[in-house]
Amino acid sequence: MKKLIIIIIGLVFFLNCCEKKPPEKKFEPPIYRVSTFGNDRANEITVAINPVNTENVVIGSNLNWYYYSFTGGSTWTEENLTSIQHGVWGDPVVMFDDLGLVYYCHLSDPEGDAWVDRIVVQKSLTGGQTWDDGRGIGLNGTKLQDKEWICFDRSNSSYTGNLYLSWTEFDNYGSADPDDKSRIRFSYSQDQSDSWAEPIVISDTEGDCLDGDNTMEGAVPCVGNNGEIYIAWSGPQGIYFDKSTDGGLTFGQDKIISDMPGGWAIDIPGIYRCNGMPFTVCDNSDSEYSGNVYVMWSDQRNGNDNTDIFIMKSEDGGNTWSSRKMVNTDGITAHQFFPNIVIDPLSGILYIVYYDRSETAGNETEIWIARSDNGGETFDNYRISEKPFMPESDIFFGDYIDIDAYNGVIYAAWMEMNSREMSVWISKIMEEDFNMLD
Image (cartoon, rainbow, N blue to C red; front, side, top):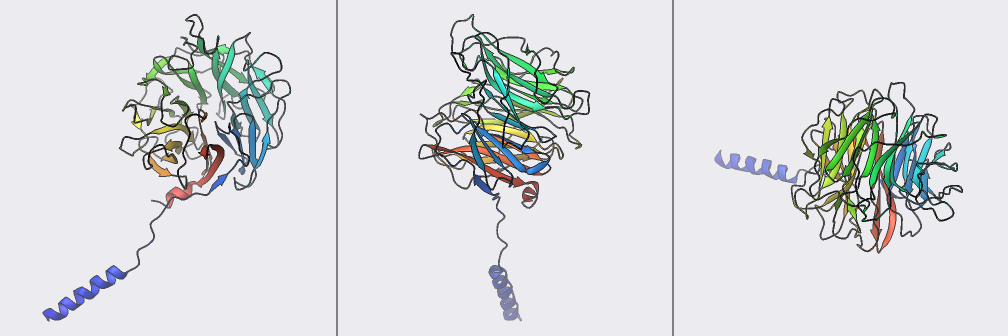
């Protein structure tokens, strides 16, 4: 009997060992190369999804490129953006409104001696295939207008449909003269960018003009459910926050909602320059987190060799803020940088795309995405890119990458550098892809 028991136990052990284990689930969303030409300035990637047709995607990149797809990102058309009246000089930002109109914001390069003297917004009625000549905004003598961002009001307020634009103005870019200052300006359009209101200054204090830690930079607006406008940016004291409750006619008193140890201009090995400036988003969904405002950024509070991504949220319109939470969960000394954030306006799920070096050697860099479905309380992090790439510190790498989401469709867009050549890439991710990993 004892011998029979031993044989049975051995047989069970053998069968368990030989049983085929299910394959490990991997996160492998499709990845497409967007750009086809070698381009030493194919950086500062921006992406937007058409909410009317999520197969229609538009990307912008430095210095004057645009790319459009009607096949969900699997195929692309690549063109140069032109503006006869204003010229095109980088800092691209693209955005769709809820009618399927797409806007391309950028800096100016008009004929003559002027350069970057206004912000330009061009509009497409054809899903990014063709563009009008655009409107120039913020011309103010010889002052320089820089680093703009745009958002769309989809609230249930009297301001619905408005466009909002914020940016930095320099008295004299690069000047060390203490009398030369930087500040945050703002404008709005009530007619789909056919005209823009006279810009106002919304920052209560000014920074210097050196385009560094003591400069006012990185203003990104978003809109709340009742038409409130929220904006955060970086400056000498950390992260500043302000809001408007009258459609952008007036703004309140700036608040410092977080410090940024080491400043917003951070050093990353192999990167020409890097910043940790904040992005601001608001939950416009019908989820339980509707109305939450989030500010997300990166800094080096944990050491110069350890750049991390942080997020704070407000559940009362920016009056009070939660404590900081770290988005990346690697738990080691590594660099996570150039993050950008989006909230799916239908589901309320947060997605953050960023460069990561937690699982690479040296300066090799990968693309990761963080996801939160509980109002930013916790994040799960996933690698997107198929293999790492190697940036070169003597080539300008840009100042941001981008991500957009609508109704469970997410597009993350970034730049890679291989053999000193820059290229634009995109990944199409479906929300159910994450559910399959649970």
